[in-house]
Length: 81
Length: 439
View 1: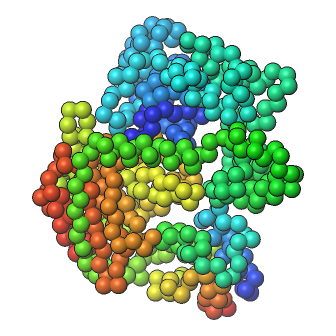
View 2: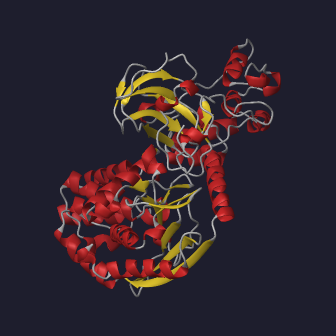
């Protein structure tokens, strides 16, 4: 799975959970909590969404690293690459 | 029209989901009601057969008005359906409400909205705003010459007046609504490019750009007839409920610092074991502890009524959910005392999602017996809450500190309980959180 595919999957999951976020807004550096108002419930839903879509199991211990869209993409390409 | 919260005085019947002759069961969703705060799926509280619809879709009526006549199961048929609703009060389909006043206290059949200050029904006023109709030129045919929505519709249909808005539910994403408010764009005039024609943020931006480009002279006129936004309506509803609360309820406040170390350690190991979709948030532990402690101190859980305090056996915990477009709503997680942590988590996810989408059931808005507000995510240390009447208490949580403690506060009604009992309640929450495995 290449980075473009991973990016597409992550964007799809985020916009499904927060439908008011437009794809254009999702630049790589965007901070999910600060800029998009993603709370812990939304965040858990993103983790569950990625689990369903990519069959990836993200342990809680890794949550603190996953602050931006870019961080999600890098993390997942390490894990799935 | 059921009371779906202390801040509701009237509601608009948006659509009926049943028709005369249909059989309904207790708990069925029979209609959609707009309370100004949200679209609510209205449940019915008696089983039977719908005989007659009294309030048509589009009408706005005060709380307590008879919406329809129901032939209740096991009750012999009364007079023909054309009889005045007052003649068959036993079959008035007034869903049970948590308001202290039973529906019977209202004049049955009062389906004409209360006359407005200038004898304009609220729905007519809203419609006129939406259609850009000047009420001064509308002939009223309602009670005492009041202008009804039919009068407005007739006025709009006159030649030379071009209504630009279609009735019915406007689909727009929360972000689009917020943006429209900020940019002063009337959503009704925006073409939607989202699913099922829903208006999304990009549509609003495009409309705002076009409006700027097509010159300014019309702008002042457009502003003058801009429809009242949902955000403004919600603000007003919150204002009414909170003003009433501060006026009528003698609040007292207590706070205690709770060590969350044991709870967080347990949660971490528990979540390592659980499959991803079953993982818990610490708020599930707070919810369960708040509910179980309420069973020990019943004075915090129930309703204040005209005859005093009515405790509740079930803990239906109102969850203050802030909405992305602004404002808040506090639908209830039902029967929390009997739910496992996993069940609470599932119910919470479902409730938050529906609250944000604006789809809740009427019982969730009328049956909360106690409210919980967690502002920890916003980074505050302590919450000093205002009780949501007719409830008698509200529990607040701030953020988890670096020392892994959390400050729990109680705002409680001094008519029902004293500081001592409030302290017992907060201490019960503390003790429960020290043994998370037993929650």
